[in-house]
Length: 464
Image 1 (tube, one colour):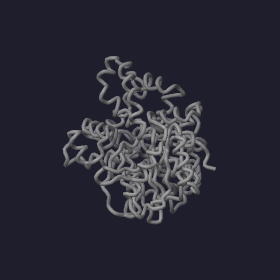
Image 2: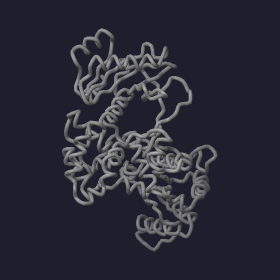
Image 3: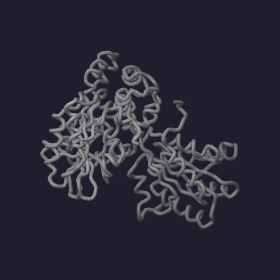
Image 4: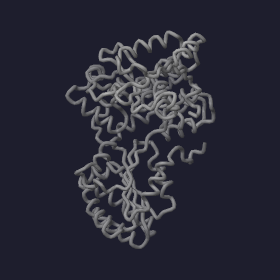
């Protein structure tokens, strides 16, 4: 696939195109770093009269200086334009829009707002004037501080009710990520997704190469694009003041710590400040809280997980080996990773199975679940890899086996776990997922007991 092609962004492109027809139009685009926001905006507005500016860690005066330079070059063919205030900049854009329709993109908006906390209020004042005047201008605010960008549009916030579109750009799932590589082998595709994930920039950096080569050359080699990116992103993220602590927290979560106290003990983080740090990591899209899927709204204790496959891979295998890699001991680390990789593939396989049930499976076979996730008991003794709920009942329970073929023992275990859920799980569809297929005895029982069997190849097959 060409590195400049658009993959699975048709809905977002349509939203941007429709929103750009408004007079005026406000678009708020939210998404993690490296997920392709800037590239999408470039494609969406490539045929329009546009000023595009990206914020960074600088102060308001420097932002305005650089914005003026960009606007002057784009619209006037000069670099002598100057803005002393945001009011002056927005008045200039309004004047230009009166002459000819204009698109203004303010990328990494969280940095602009950090330098000028009242910026959304300033924008709201100008926006209301533009709205009354039906000014032909499209204003795009794009940012990677997920919670901040969402709160900016909530009721009571200055820009509440004004956005024509508010798309949220997510990393690609395992099936769309497969478009970046020239193979259809399901095991190869699943392994690649487990290591690189669905972040577009990571897929591009990896290229269409064998996984072992990607790990050796693009991840473990000092100076390679993927060598240190998670650490750099954390250090550069808005609101990160003590990156060492955040790195420690991410590392223990990647190693399997899920509970608040466990994370605190293993990372050495001060318990009093841990929630704030976890919230920040969640805001940035690097950590997610997961709750056991249940058919009711009973409060559950969350488990913390690294949200992105590559971050999980990096913090599990790279963060603790950087000293060795800095000394060029790449082959040793590579050998250790390859020997251990199957021990971590179960996590990724479960993710893909849940995604398949929720998005790609034929609902007539798996049921129409309102929510798809996993379930675990409070004592941690019972887990169900895939669980679906609807209408106050469990409609699906599933078990995922990466390292071997599925057996009758796996079905027995799943049925025992299902019984722990009680009456609300009676009649739920049972599914066994296994990478390499199933034993003949399991196939016979599955036929008799109406159990669905899904192998790795079926995760990539059409639902119909």
